[in-house]
Length: 439
Ligand code: LLP
Image (cartoon, rainbow, N blue to C red; front, top):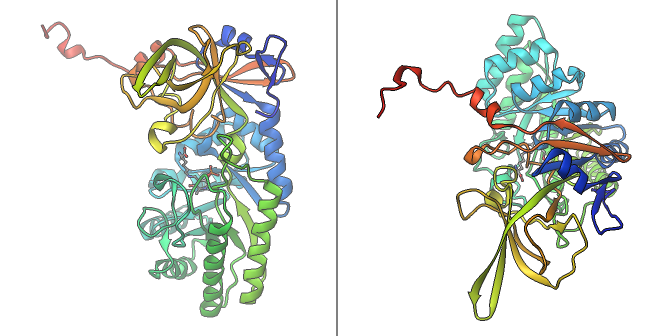
């Protein structure tokens, strides 16, 4: 987080708050969000994309409080389920500033979105297009919609989070002609107002080359639409995907530079196609929510393992793991960690930070160095855990999901409290019928 500093004892402070105090008050593991950092990232995106719409991608991290910060900072919100939509509406987000995504929206979700007056719906399949048109007619509304286009870009990121190559579930294929067919059908549907195209090429991307190819291809489609239908669609949503630095190996992306490049690319492509420049939209999730959060863990066991050949790897077990951050296990994601309660006094030793779950793949930080004097009771902070950690958290092994604590100006407050075993058991009805019958 931007406001993280070392205090006089070598302890880490975020937003002026000592992480030892956070651990004492709220327990560990605990997600700590630097509100100032989160809000300033919102502002940086808004300023860099002045005149465009910035939708914060709620899937990265969504709570009522976060939704309110986002709305406060005048960003829109990207939701991709009826439940994310429900959270946004409960938080009081203006429905007109919401874009609704998803490759398998149910009738009930579409109906809720229409009744709430959601600003944009991104259509992902022919069946959805027809169902939405029918619902619009039934409810007497005419939603603004975009067609999600699969542009055929191989983004340089992990296979599970690349979304614009042909062989995956999202969007209408451009090369296959489905995108144009979907546009034609949407233009013919009197209960839909087609306002633009959408493209999202993947996540954790550092290179604008992918966006460049995507822009080239969607603008090509805008041109075909103009040529065939005599209509210039006014909006172009280029999705999210801007990468963040998890370790020193990654170079952080400068938002202003990224925005300038994207605008230049779109302007150039539109000029070449003889089109007016459409209103742009982007949907950053990770770039806003990732860096302002760190996770505080308490160290339990420290176990040196002889790797042979004179190599030793020290396994440092913490009190959470893949249930609060599955990204290393799922995407082979790299993280770092730092001793949070004191100054390190030992030599750096090769270590792996692991969780307390019952499987060997339960890794938080695969390769790192920790101080040789690390011991049980120490606090470890793992930075850049704001995006896709809490939102992908599980109750594996019946661990309750950690609290989310906001820090600002020397004060800490709970945004979401810790989940307890009672919370989990409340959902479990047991099996009264068989009670006492099993021996
Ligand atoms: N827009 C759309 C349509 C998306 O599908 C996504 C992410 C975003 C925007 C936001 O992308 P971002 O700016 O956060 O990269 N769980 C994975 C990431 C999945 C991304 C899903 N879609 C991870 O932990 O890396």
